[in-house]
Amino acid sequence: MTEFGATCLAWSATFGYWALIAAFALSLVRLVKGPTLPDRIVALDLMTVLATAFTVLLAIDNGEGHFIDVALALGLVSFLATVGFARYVMTRDVTSAANLPASPSSGLPQSLAQAPSPEGADASPSSAREKPDA
Amino acid sequence: MRLPLQQGKSPMHDLLASLLIVIGAFLCLSAAVGLVRFPDIYSRMHAASKAGTLGIGCLFLAAIFHFADIEIAILCILAIAFFMLTAPVSAHLLARAAYRSGVKSWARDGVDQLAGRYDETDGRLAGHAFENDLSTKN
Image (cartoon, rainbow over all chains, first blue to last red; front, side, top):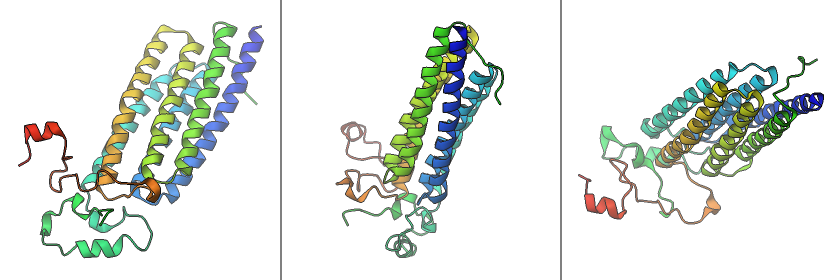
């Protein structure tokens, strides 16, 4: 009867490994082709969560309880990384137009029209936001 | 091919742990599918933060049931609480930063009710009653 539980655990761990590998590959797709910078940041956030899940699964599959510490530390670091990236997105110069979608209609002409605005040096990041109903 | 088979305290622990592993890994996979398939940044963030958090919570629960050890259980409950607390915070920060830096939502999303309501200089959201009462804008 104990053999049954161990076999069940081994099969589900194998399924979990392959599901997490597939999820990693899918979020890598979004990381490469995400049209804006926040898309890539969301993909990185999910990838750190998936790495944490992989660590927990390794801990269960190897019977090694110390890997849980690694997972906890990785979760802490991933939260700090996401907050840092969000601060970076909010405070950087948006006239570089790198965060706008890559379609040719938006992006460069709008940012060029925004660049010689009379606000001068202290152009806030929100000043270049497009009004959707304009 | 594999290491020697691991087993927990009882077959019931093993069964519960393997069920939670399957559910958690499937939720992580569905988070990644949503990240690829959804149309704009805000819905992608919805998929990644919610399903990812639930999936990793299930995996930590599986670790609790597999090890059946009080120290590891405390650590795992701490980790679950931490993920549940920080995932909405980071998703909200990222969505706010994305909106303020000009990332548009899906074209078929309808009306953008936040349009023009962020203050241009200090980034506060205007129009709520408590802000009109406090009148902290200068």
